[in-house]
Image (cartoon, rainbow, N blue to C red; front, side, top):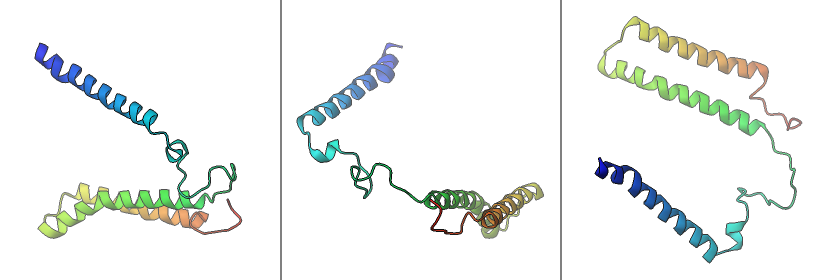
Length: 123
């Protein structure tokens, strides 16, 4: 019981304490301008505090992630059935077909609502 306590509680506590102290020491010993500034992927953080950024980037990125996730979840099912000629029960085929139908339907709704059209006047 005591060896488990040492193994699971005390040793990880001291390891995390050492890592925290190393991080604090490295921060105070080496204070450079780049480590103090905010990291802003190509933007000058002090030129304009409120600059316009097109929200279409985020909209298309989220849509891409959703479609990519759906394809990543459905692809192994189709590969298993095609490679091994092992067609699963009709229930699983129906579930995958419904997922594909919903994926195509949501993409068509997004196109119909104009979510994929690129307009310069919208920010």
